[in-house]
Image (cartoon, rainbow, N blue to C red; front, top):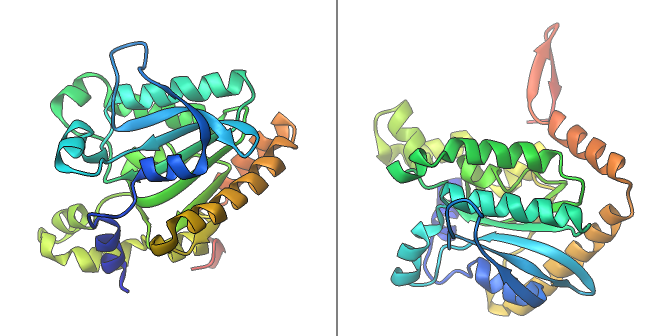
Amino acid sequence: MTAYEKLKTVRQNGRPTAADYIENLFSNRVRLCGDRRFGEDSAIEAGIGLLGDTPVTYIAIEKGKDVTQRIKNNFGCPKPEGYRKALRLMKQAEKFRRPVICLVDTLGAYCGMEAEERGQGQAIAESIMEMSALRTPTISIVIGEGGSGGALALCTADTVYMLENACYSVISPEGCASIIWKDSTRAPDAADALRITAADMKNFGVADVVFDENFDNFKGMCKTISAQLKKDVDRLTSMPDSAILQARYDRFRKFGIYEEGGVLHGTDL
């Protein structure tokens, strides 16, 4: 499939949402709500649960399964209070030494006027800054669409997983085509140029693990993801805080390509 065909696949109705993964990955769940500043954002579903025998904090962007749920959840586009709730729970997880697991599926952060009035950009920036320095293991899973800063706010992690058809991009192909060519119908060209697929992200070092999609055996697929999560959580929790922070710093410093003295350095294209 082309990059744009993969993007259309993850946008299809009937695809499992974050709620389905939460149900299959975590047991003994306690749902937590509110940012303690403004209110609750149902686009972000969060709480505490058990990954096997390990207590974790989970934070997920939930689109909803039907029209009513999707309207309530802003079609999976979080508002500032959603990101502030996520950050509040990350800091709580840090205090109690719980790993943080994020599930990401969003076109991008909500761009309505009220979100801007309540500091959308600042909320995203604070989430990225604080998550980069969080003294507890962090793992993010892109289960569908990982759009712009709305996804990056929950993906500044030690380890990033993606599903095989998931996409991760600084802007939607439609938005990119509208800006570059003034023609949104050229979205397929933009998708190819943006290199948004899981395979691209794995090649660039942005994604560490890519999982095959098998929704006909969704429980089995979740068992595979759970096994990898347990393995990485065990590895990360065995590391001292200073080593986790240094490894996270090094991971992000390796992104990108630059030219010096006529020689290209960085991730292979």
